[in-house]
Length: 152
View 1 (cartoon, one colour):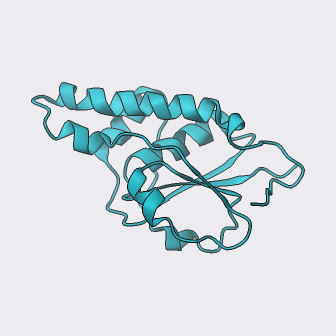
View 2 (tube, rainbow, N blue to C red):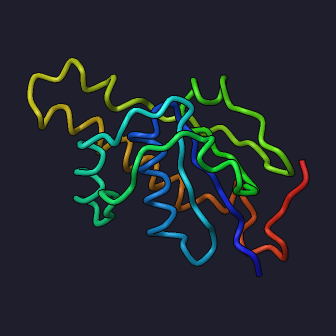
């Protein structure tokens, strides 16, 4: 059984796609090979790392990377987790199937926060929404298929 290769793509590869990769590796490592990248990477978001650590998932060893760094990976699925990445998603060779599941942008939402705790509320909410998506990712992606490849 081949695990499907799934790329979680957002613009900056600093927050949402990193959370998705972290959750996928934490919850579904036996059934999915997870990656993340961005169309315009700009470094890891410290608050994202912190709230994931709170939930028991360490993404501190991840780094923000451009989707071109993964050009040699034959993805089965590309999951865009922000609207901008969905609109600017590059074309992937082969049989990669694209799925869009947009999540709010915690850094944008936290800009108006008056305290650190108020800012973290947005990160925690999105973190938990991404976790719920990963928990039910089987309804979007057939996991544990013979080849892991889907036409389409």
